[in-house]
Length: 220
Image 1 (cartoon, helix red, strand yellow):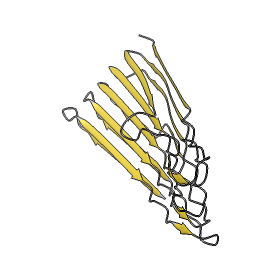
Image 2 (tube, one colour):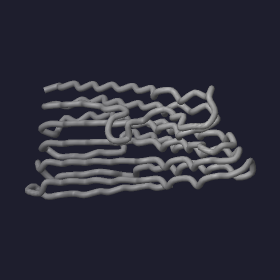
Image 3 (tube, helix red, strand yellow):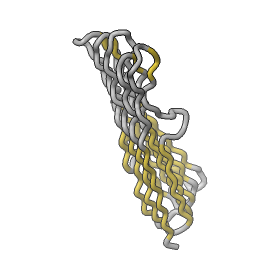
Image 4 (cartoon, helix red, strand yellow):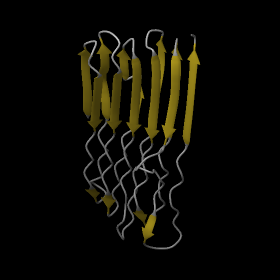
């Protein structure tokens, strides 16, 4: 598994920018009934925090990306993509503008594309949630993104569904507040397994389930 963390404290005049990214490794492939594909490795974030000693802008970004499952041939079972779950992994403090961004990207399931049927791995699920209460910053922008994994390509076997994605932000601030989420967006474009060849009569994987909620409350 992979874990990333980062902490920076700046002075009054310094803009503070903090970023951390953890990426899990991919699982190895499998062949035959005794040697299955391996799961993708997990990824997580430790403390990802930016602090201004006074009123400088603070930007904090944290990303965790799960590994992909290994492929399978000749009766093996492919590896599952890693699930990713982030909850309040990013934080910051300032009397100025505070911007927080948290990104969870699950791993793809391993595929099966050999003439002898094997079994695809499951796509990973992703969850990203932020709950923030800040009465000090002049403004707070909070963003959470979650992207589920894709199902691996298959032949001569039914495909697996895309992974689910859930993102939520609940933000309370005294001054200008903005909360936003994104689910299953970006270059990853999660999808169920594609049937790329082989015999007729097999089904591709289903589409991803995605849920996003953003709530912002100003008390000023």
